Image (cartoon, rainbow, N blue to C red):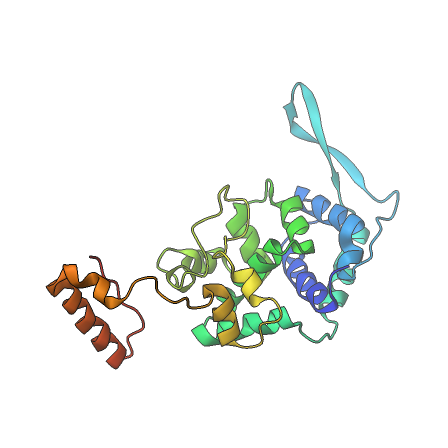
Length: 254
């Protein structure tokens, strides 16, 4: 079973998405099926009331046969939404992982949407119930993965696109990579980020230490670069100047 705080967070995302979903859609059918199977893992026990569902034939055909699907009844849909909303309102103390993510977000001054993108991507990468929820409903979701992520966060898709763009802070800071390999998953995270946010990290320095790793002693001394002559001395001056000005980063190509 998912930890209680994680249950609350996932239930909140699910509540946001259900508020934008028509009970007559194929996505609604997938959602109630997921709740029946895995809802208890996030504190949302749910059972479909027998005899309330309606099966309809779509106008198109597949392999010469009519394609049918189930329409979720109003009663079952309202019950499902009520269970999910109740779970999203429960009070729980945040876990160490979530507090570490907050430290990262605060350090870089990320906004609520950027925080949500990282949060969902982390929960997916950690194989929480968020992973099965995403995988079970993403196929055929109107607007694709970006629209679904936006609906989980209850934000307009264009706002999300701006933050996922190459010029967005998440990409510029190296926290997320390019679009997922198959563009059917949440944004990919930088290698090692999930493990760096996990206990026993308790500070931003701990997170950086686990993400970057310990500083190792160099195999070469500065004298080993005497053959570079003036180029080596130029690099020395650049590095000293950068340190004096507390520059955030420099690039040197020899």
